Image (cartoon, rainbow, N blue to C red; front, side, top):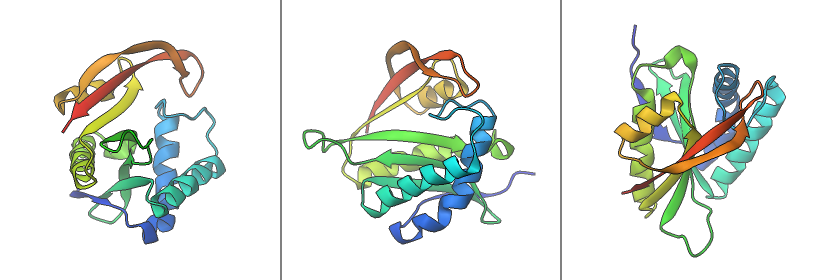
Length: 175
């Protein structure tokens, strides 16, 4: 059964309350093989520590945190818009950590998150977005369908969670 999902920007004052459910999503994605800066095994403590740093950045206005929630209020996905960039790039933002829990995949949630990140970027006055993803991964199709332009690949850029080097593909999008 597909549940109704909504995507919203987390308010700075609630960022701390989202740490635990976001840690659940992160751990699930890494355990599922997502190359999102973490190695296996990813402890709950490390996942929580990461989201604490993100929450602090949200409070400082350095990033926008978007969350996808199902009809029961459970966090099933997330994406971040990094706004704290050098002063010569006030028109740009980085998109990071687009994650969807494995139990909620294939329901259009990733597309909802990407649409919402575009909207938030426009609200923030950003018209150039940049992201990177594992070369050949499922996310590449999503980004291409959403109008992202492939820049190129960097071989041996990162490690997969279980080890082993992977290439990374960089994308940009003009809004």
